[in-house]
Image 1: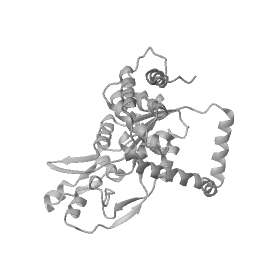
Image 2: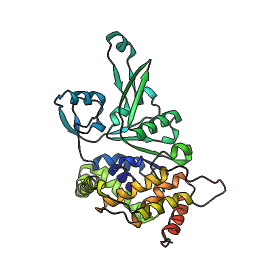
Image 3: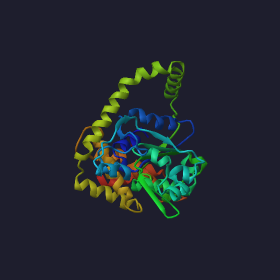
Image 4: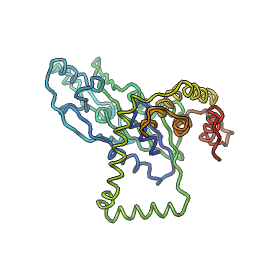
Length: 331
């Protein structure tokens, strides 16, 4: 789960991560802790979409217009935002609304930004994603894939950048996600309750320690946190230089083909994730081990479900991976 989240931060184009698991396993806690690892970003101070001051691909149309007219943009640094999407949210709350009355009477595009605007260049988190209205999930996935949100009302159209890391979590007991929606998430992590008594005791002790003195607890782990943050920043810079050998790419596609994965998303995401993990470890070449570590996260949720099959899909992915790449399976 932690690896999948960090890889999505390094390369948001992986397409987000879906985390399914038992209740009380710390899914939400881990996801919300992610923003503390991220460096501050530069944004245009008076822009509601967190536009980048210099990168045109991350700017709203208004900011681009101002750049074209050589206006000087006020720049501030801010923490990367994590936006929580409430289950009862309406489409207007998510996408934003256009004030038709103001538009008609004053002749201006009066746009009230929604959650997608606030999530631009940040993280959008949906807890209990499997309980969210399917139509809203479609809207979110479309925005995540295209990087833009378009709102159209009564012949008036407004669009703004909506590039975010989409993170969903849920409990499989409360219902599964439609396969075509599940396929749109780049990675899928399954979380199980810890069974080892010693580890459970350690978790309980740490929780008690945090409850008694939160500030002291955070200070204890501050050096480790700063180290991970520096590692992520270096990985983001290194990512462009990472290469993956043609033979490895062919093998990835063969694994996807033998697993009968629909479409090409599995191939694309596995390639991206393998590059991101190499960058995370400070290397510019992808190894077989990199692919081994990410391939289950990238493909597990894309397999066709056979109701009579009891084999865990993660085991199935690793088995085919071992055959194609010619490596020995771990017992």
